[in-house]
Image 1 (tube, rainbow, N blue to C red):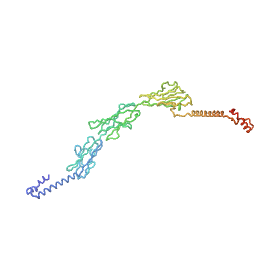
Image 2: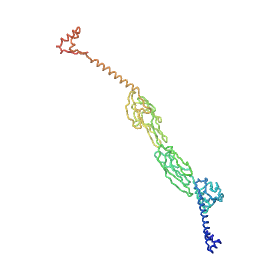
Image 3: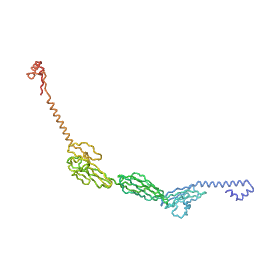
Length: 432
């Protein structure tokens, strides 16, 4: 290109005719100067760094595009849309879209805002710097569309304990596709998720979860939680309704301690379930209930107890789910001093020998009577032993003492004793 320019000059033609060395030297010097100018310009272009950033924006909100230049030498900055139409040329907006507004213009930055962003605005925008050659930087705008409110559905509104239930949660119209998490109280559940893309580049998410329920699950909330970059704290909640059979417990209202002959017995049957038990029955296992026993609703009352009433009494509660029962073992004692024989109670069965329904109490009268009898027996034994030993205590007369009873004094007694050595076979014992 430089050489062609020289060919058009007259002094170049003169150099061809004369073939002079000075002209050739002049030509090479001019070419070198032109090349130096081009190289300096390229170095200046390389020193002008053009930068921008990608933008993510929620549909309906505002996006901002910033074209930034480092070490600008008065080169022109412009912004183009994905169709390469000029949005802004310096601080002038050729495009007739009032949603684009100039935020800042200087030698080092062109910043433009786009309001009320829609899906049609998504794409690659171009920051362009008029240099030789031109520089370009690209800003991708991604439009986020939050899903609609999630919906939880169930095959049944009420489920019985021990059965399984299935819940379905659907979140429609999101971009990108949302994700769904399940929580049952504080427990996280694992669901099966399907993703469906619609014709308008939107997504519908469906998640299903299945689990068994217990009576403890009644009233527990199940949450369908939506995770999406365009929205926070989006969830749907459903409370479980679980039916379960009754829970039964017999409570002793009277007496507080051991049951004895002549006492009255008052038992109350407490039954809870869902639905509430509609029937409560009292019966005596393997025998008939005493004829004068009175049943009033959940209470059983028996007057004037005797040992013929001993046995197991059962309260049975029934609802729509099933039935359950609790047992009470009655043992009647015949006298206040009767010491109860230790027995082992059946599992989950109350026993009147243990004084159920109230804390077990010690019968101090019985203990006192036993101690008195023991002390009296010990005293009587001591008296008898004393009399026995007293009657068997004796006085013995030896040969030396023989004849002492008839002596007037001690000397005579000795003389009499010495004279009787030949009669040793007549030694006698006397007992008092």
